[in-house]
Structures are given as C-alpha cells and as structure tokens.
Length: 300
Image (cartoon, rainbow, N blue to C red):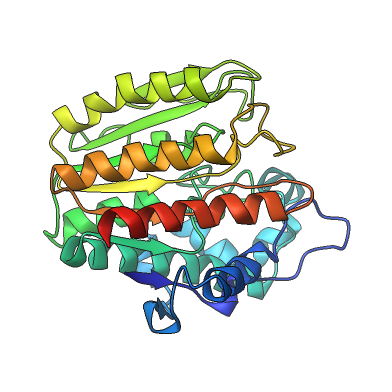
C-alpha cells in the first residue's frame, strides 16, 4: 500500500491552540512502530501546484494565502482557525499533493492513503474550520480534467458536515457526496450534499452502523470509478468535538463496511485522515491505526 506522509504536515501553532498538530508525526511513528505500515510503503508527496489548487479555489484566495496578505484579514483568519504562516501554506500544498498522489495510486493499486487531509470545510474563496484548501474537491476535479476518472464518489464520515466540498462540487453531476454527520455539530449552517444523513447526539455503534449500511448502497448505485474516503475519527466517544459515542471497535466496523464493499465491487479507495481531537490524543491515534489495520486486512 502506498501511503503519503510529509514532515511538512506539522506546522507551528500557539501553545494553547486546540488543534493537535503533532498527531500527524505521532501517527506515522505508531504505524511504523506497530508494523502496520513499513517504511517502504511511505512516500513523500509532491506539493500541489497553483494550477491544481485553482481547479477548486479562486485565484484571489490562493494568492492571498501564497503571499500572506490574508493575515491582515482578521475575519478570514478567525474563520480559518489558524494564524497564517508560510509553514501553514506549504503544509496545505503538501496535504493536497498527498491527496492527489494517493488517488492516482489507488486507481492503479486498489487502495492508498494520505496521512493528512480531509479538509472539507474549505470553500472556493475562503478557508474555514482548520481547512485551507479543499483536498477532495481538488482531487475530484483533477481526476476529471486529466481523464483519470469521470464518476467520483466522496464518502465523508467525519462527524462534521463537509460544507466546503458541497459548495465547490454542487453543480458537478458526476460527483456523488455521501455525508454522515452530527446534526447539532459544526458547521451550524449546512450546505446540502448529494446524500446527507444527520446523526443525533450520543449516537452509539449499532444505530450508526445501521444507518451507514442502509445509505451507502446509494453510493454504489452511482457506479463510481473511485471512492475518496474521508475517514474522520471524531465520531469517537472520547473526541471532545464529536458529540457522538462510537467505540474504537465501532469505527473499525465502519471502515470495514466502506472498504470491504468497495473492494467487492472493484472500486479503488483513496483515504484521508479527517478530524480527530481526543484528549488525550492517544485515543485518536489508536482509532486512526484501526483504519489502516482494516485497510491492510481487506486489501492485503
């Protein structure tokens, strides 16, 4: 399995910031230490180019981030949730680059992953909710532009609704977005996806997995050529931003449904990490590892 990781995924944030930026390197180390992945399965992604980012984002927004002029826009920075830095800009390009390379690798090999990404709150003209550039929107439009895939499905199981993805891809009828998310959670103004399933607070494994099993069939009826899987871990009961009550075992069953049903149909899957904010962060890291254990079990 090709998995894309870069030390650029880590960037400076204030000491009191609630985003666990060190989780990327920590996850890489655990995946290697537990021998879930081997060193020769990890690849340094190329950073995304301006041309690639502009497939999904406005030139004005990109150039404001590239130059750093956005840092003087207090509203934009507050909406994003990160202070601007050149390291954040490079990190965002590397994350999208990893998503592109993961999707291309999955088309060839069946499955691949990016140890970052899932930045589904980024809109065409602004960042939001810790998301600078929208990786799955860029990837979807990149695959279509380069005739690598026409019909694409996004399965977004992060606990927060992918409002940015829905906004950017809304008019593209060859992209199906299936989004299961917390009804009462951020973002508080949802933008409709192709298929949205709202989840009530404190929902546990059994009800969640039942809803997933019933609704994922719509994705397969769409007959996608690739699935982009936003495998957020924030539905976990220990996640302080999640408001759901899934167990680590329940999340592995979730991943197994998505990955097994895709492989059975011969549909390649490219994975992104998505959200994960437990305290302590070890709960999130263990759950992320569960996703990769499951991928290895199913795809070999």
